[in-house]
Image (cartoon, rainbow, N blue to C red; front, top):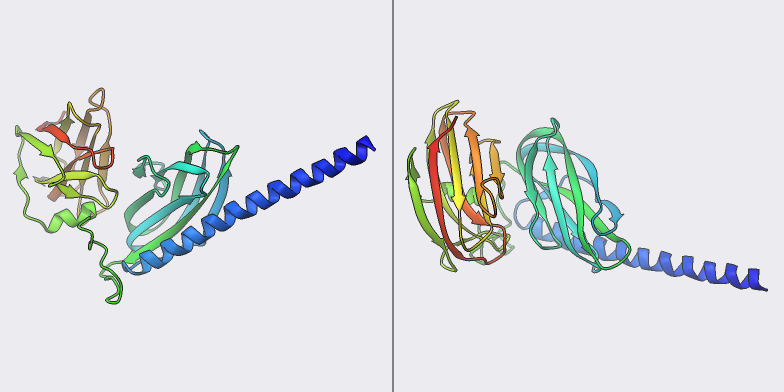
Length: 280
């Protein structure tokens, strides 16, 4: 009798676990369907099947995608309702980090622009209320020249913009030796990830080296240098010590680059100092 009860209890436990897993999978599938509809309105199309897995809090794993290229490739991550913080780090075929989303949210997005390639995403389950949480990943492609559907809501209707959108704005041009004192506030540019940013231009020579340093007494800084018409993008969180950022840059091509002073935290405000010096 004891053996029968134990087997019955075990069967019930397995059935319950399977039900919970099915529910988590359905949650992720539903959220990914919503993401696909939203991205279609922004000119994107699915570029991979949905890739899914399950991780416990603090665990990570890597998933490889082959992206078609020829535009902006974005990989969207989503997780079930037991997960409250999921992070993504994107690597190219050579193992270099090309983008990351480590904000405190459950819907990270990483992107890159370029030709067809194999990309690897490191999935990090930062916060999970259960023994494990299910996540989903899917690649989307916005072909070069694609525009949003006229029948859908424009992507920037809320006033939020992508970092690359700054390239079409009138921004201050920085030079070696410049030190800029600025303030991020609700009047600053709001990114699509709900963080504030200020943008600057730098006109570089091919092979030129500079050091950009972003310091703030008020927020955890996030510094980015981006080539609007190319694949080059570098960023840093805390290489200048504490919550300050520093990038040592060697420009691959001559042209105009974006230097963006931003924050890690959503809607974080405060003062900052951005300095540009000659690199080593």
